Length: 141
Image (tube, rainbow, N blue to C red; front, side, top):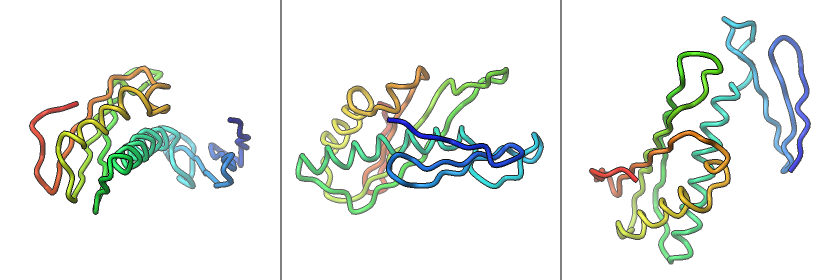
């Protein structure tokens, strides 16, 4: 996979992904940016959530289950000192539909432990939790 990201002035960058979608990135105004695009760290959060979300839907569909609603909340904790890398991620998966808990847990574990290329590209600790039809599990995965 290869892409070209071009500097567009100040702290802003833009590029076309290999799949043909434009991504714009910029820094916060307090560090010289103009807030004209997402922060690279924000895109990393979205990449991790999107990767695991796609995996979970694909796995559930293979099991012949499909959520009627699926939403993720992701939080990344960062170190206080430079390079201020992410040290931990917590992803909460909220699913609704006729979904057996054991199948949801299996799909999350398979994504987290085997399939998500984004999470396997990071060296941060990733914690996952879930709720089904508004009922939150008391356990983390």
